Structure formats: structure tokens, C-alpha cells
Length: 91
Image (cartoon, rainbow, N blue to C red; front, top):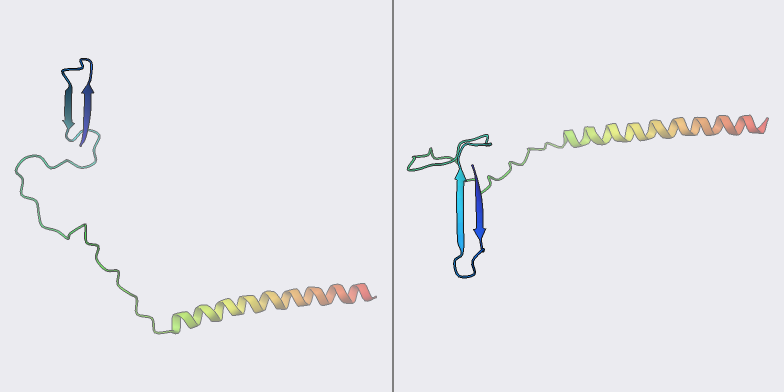
């Protein structure tokens, strides 16, 4: 549903305003027309509160274990490469 509004100011005394409403054209959904009874639903203007997930602490603990394992693995590889280069440069 969309509308086209036109204003005509050709004559300073006579001002003409028009509105044309096109229903069901270039629209995914049909608009409300006439005296229809619509089904009751949830109020779209009052958003429903988002439920807070129940966190038992284990998921957070597992994330920290994975992150710290990855960081320590990267540091271990970096130290190994640094020691190898240091030993190679000493010879």
C-alpha cells in the first residue's frame, strides 16, 4: 500500500491538494481496507522482554579454558621458534 500526494499551487487563490492511495500494488502484504475484524495478537509497540539464558558457569569456564589453551599454545610455539633462532645465531 502506498500513497501519492500532489499539491497544485498554480493559482494563488485556489490551492488544490490530492491524495491517491494504491492498495495491494507493489506490496508484499495487502493493506487494511474497510471494516475488517483483525485477529488479536501481541502488541508490537511493547516489546517482549528478552529471556536471560540460565548460565551455570560451565559454559563460561569452557570458553576460558579453550582461549587460554590457544594463547599458551601460541606462546609455546613462539618461544620454540625464538630459542631455535637464538641457538642458530649463536653457532
